[in-house]
Length: 109
Image (cartoon, rainbow, N blue to C red):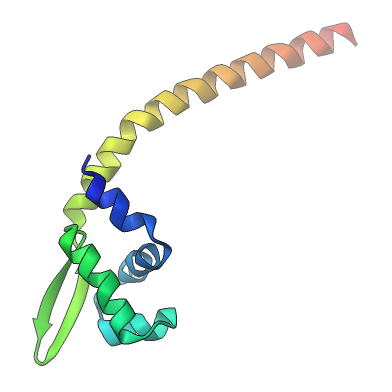
């Protein structure tokens, strides 16, 4: 997994931009308005997301719409899946242990 992705998403405003773009493409002005940022700040964050490959720009007439690229998020999900499996196993083991404790406690009462 590329650390550039994590670096780009670690900044709260950039993460908020990604969350906004889940609903569809937006212009810099739309993003700035929704987040309460000045347009140059929004542009700076979008440039980082663009360089990380997380968003792409679509020119529509005289507007530049930013939208999420699915591939990097699919890669991130696949990478996280290995950790989900480990945590699921650990949670299952914990649930089994707690169940044994409950049974033991019920037998003592």
